[in-house]
Length: 124
Image (cartoon, rainbow, N blue to C red; front, side):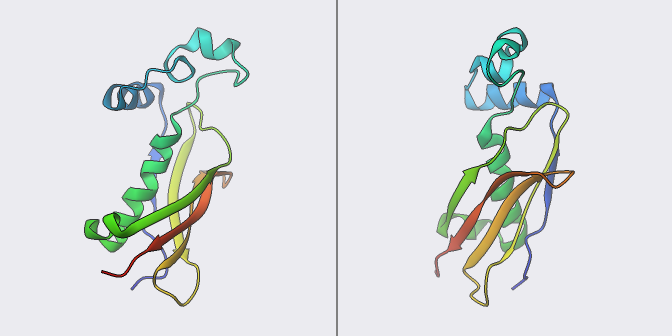
């Protein structure tokens, strides 16, 4: 079993956020309305948190196989919003000698944490 998760990267464009809104049906104006978002405390458009979280699932599946996903529990916290122009990357590493405990993250290309936490994979 590998010690690190295969990184999954996403450049975040406004079009990407709009496509994600369409897929999920989440048209919260903080994500899709530039004028509204500019007047909000966020000061501009932010990507859906679950869009970044999905990269973790993709990283786990790419490394350990899709069958592992149904046995995986994530415990994460959202550290900072993702903005148009950011590139985010998900990954992780085994937290200990135990194959079922992983430290996981999503970070910007400059290394700023976006999501941090852990993944636990139950035995089949």
